Length: 390
Image (tube, rainbow, N blue to C red; front, side, top):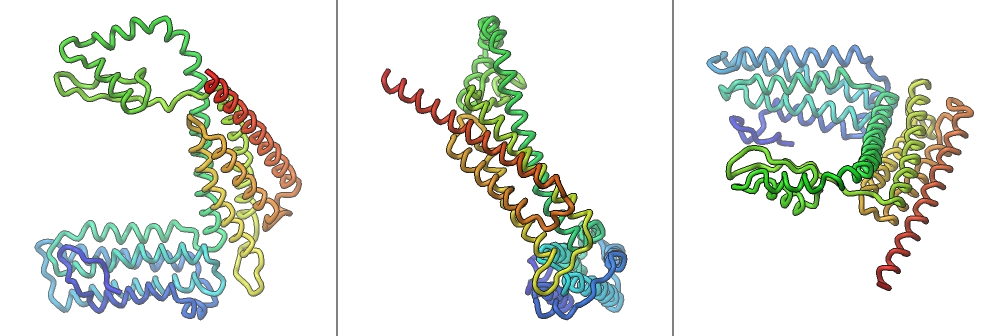
């Protein structure tokens, strides 16, 4: 498989680059991986990565601008890097062997690619005369990622759960900011009514020649944001408008729905956090015939990643004007997925009585969302009927 075309590199891959690409492709071959029955220690894998860093650094020092090593030296440097990368790839194959689950195999494949690809580029650029520091840096970056990774099933699965947890926390923060922003906006209405005339005069007449205040307000309104936070940066004819966009204001029914959905999100966060804790506190995981704990945790991660999509949809549905049906659908999908996580918990003993408490919190939060959505939908229909009669 040819490497990527690079400035200063030949179009046809060298034998060394072709060998590296073949080693990387071996990580996609189940027959090859099945031959490996024992995984290497992390210390062994990290040592192999450090060897790659050393050999890449030698090439950077001896083949940079103004350096012209003899063909024999160049061949020796290339062969040393090739062998060290192949040794690392062999250890990656062993990591992905019979005891590895699909999550670990995917992570190892990505880590190996993060070393093989920049090494291939470095080998291709050896005779170009260019400064190789950046290419060497990319090799080091890939090797450092190997050293930092959790090179076993439990670590790879927890990494996946941690990504879901990060999305949950970010969405909860956005929902809290939206809720707080709506509250502060409501409190500021009274002050705004008193000072509105003066503010308008200042904005409109701040620069009579250029009309910068009016331009800022018009630009904000055209962009769909609030004109209250618009201000002019710079002076003269070419002023730049800095807009503090206001996503809009939630009415009382929308605020209740936001609060209910936030409670549901907190319940989901508690479930994913509890699962992550049970995973880390449990025994090491290995694949085996007929399934087992590893298959259960792979399934749990699958459901958690599905929950992440529902979390993103629900967070987006909270911004005004809210679509109640979209919010209810996303909340329902999140509740169903979290319920599956609890029902299929791979290690219920690790959670104990907490499992029932998490399930009850989830049911209560979802019931609250359904009630708020029903009320918001009824209120919206009532307002529509009044407007139609008018």
